Image (cartoon, rainbow, N blue to C red):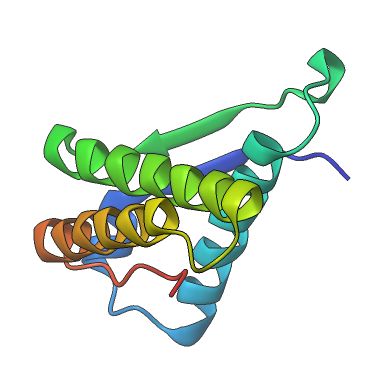
Length: 109
């Protein structure tokens, strides 16, 4: 079932994050990554909106792109390849910067 995705970083920052808010954010990111990684079909495109401050959005974009690169390398080369391990290290750095900048815990660990 296709649906629109809207991740509001400002509202996530202003709340004390409950478990349900983290689960919701994780689900939306998982859904977003699934459609980034899945088959390319033009009729499946949906609206994706991520809102927040510019710095927060840049850190979010960096973390999402590193997630995708890590997943691509993992699927192509397997877990013990040095390229995969390098991508994992870059992902961990991006997640650390996202968490430090926004105060939001990255839900996909």
